Image 1 (cartoon, rainbow, N blue to C red):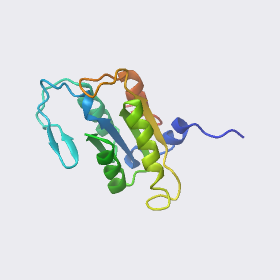
Image 2: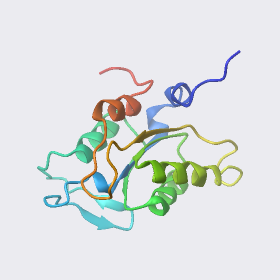
Image 3: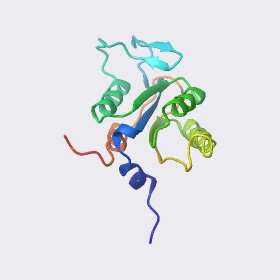
Length: 150
């Protein structure tokens, strides 16, 4: 019997028990009206900016995710995971942040978790910490893994 892939494991987790972690560097740096708070970048309710962060955040909300964090860094994302204690995670960031994030979530095993929750990662197409890009089809597919089409 073969082991399940991390995507197959996440697909078995109810969307209401998942979180989406996004890197703030995907925001349009010159026009984003969002404000940084302790819990990350907060998009205004009346935001008219058409950006990848808003599209991904809204997709997770539509699927009923437990929460979305637009983090300024790995420590903020890990704090969000500790607080929410999700059974599954989708993370969109640069390779470095994804590698460090998976390792950090692994440290929560035995403290917050009996086993590592599945973490599906979507790496950025272009790094650089400002105005980065992601494959939106891949990111949306990761968010919707195992969800019933609407």
